[in-house]
Length: 362
Image 1 (cartoon, rainbow, N blue to C red):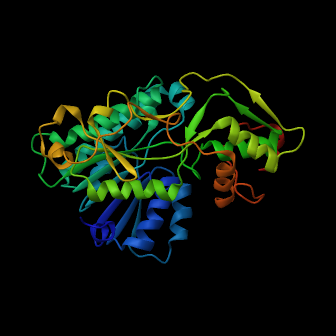
Image 2 (cartoon, rainbow, N blue to C red; image 1 turned 90 degrees about the vertical axis):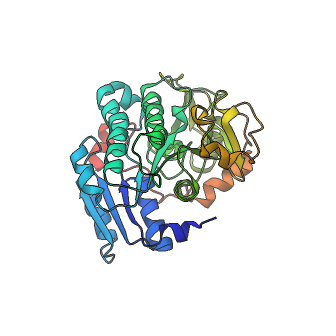
Image 3 (cartoon, helix red, strand yellow; image 1 turned 45 degrees about the vertical axis):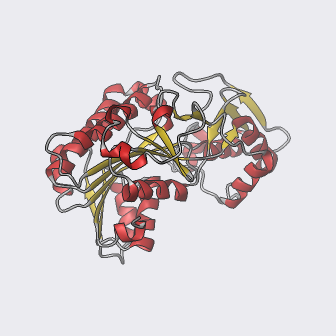
């Protein structure tokens, strides 16, 4: 089986949404470990591009392109000569998508369609779409848009006229540490700025994975897929109440409280990465699950995985996976330095509970 290093070496790569948390870590790993011929960073944020360009000022094989996935002509221009596309761009916050429904549809669904169209036009060899647990049995708009994007990407493998060598594949991830909107920096912000933690239900649980692991999942899918799969990493679950109690004990005080604010519209008690309907088409691959589209069970896709062990559970969710106890949660926080005072909370543009006092400091 081809290694990631051999697959990436001397390839031209387009990272869409490349200035975000995932894109920054993907770029770091690509440049430091895999020696691609060229990496193009495609995003719509000028400020973040300037910062990232300064970070890599000595790297001659990184190019920066201002653009939006809603602009198919800009994507066409950016994909010229590209071998591999990683799509990390999306509107990701549930309330933002609910309040800006058409923009969410244009970015997450039409954007994915535009990427497929441009990739086919430019003979791109591999497209990897990053998805989310919220795409599984969705009942908020964000989940619906990401579920539709998954279908657009995986079904592109069976488009008439698709080059035989082209592959379109997805990965799904749960809560990723060190990314904007992750619950851990949110809790730290609330403790330090408001001396409380807000939770929406005491029975809630979430998956946790490190950003470095998330990028390895993306690279595995790019290297080992044959097209049409959805790759999922096996991850531990964490009870949100346990997480809140540990963080309060370590960085709060005797007056720090947990406030139950009730579940928000579209929120789930636990994250699901493989649904009951998908499990009959899901196999195990060491630390991973691989979902094979059921509609295409008679293709080479099914033949490749026919000797893999099927998933042993009806549904893979953050409630029935291996649960971290409080000692393991504490170790996770300490290893990622989340209990240190100097650990960055949020960027100035993403503060979940801004108040006048905080604004005056910025």
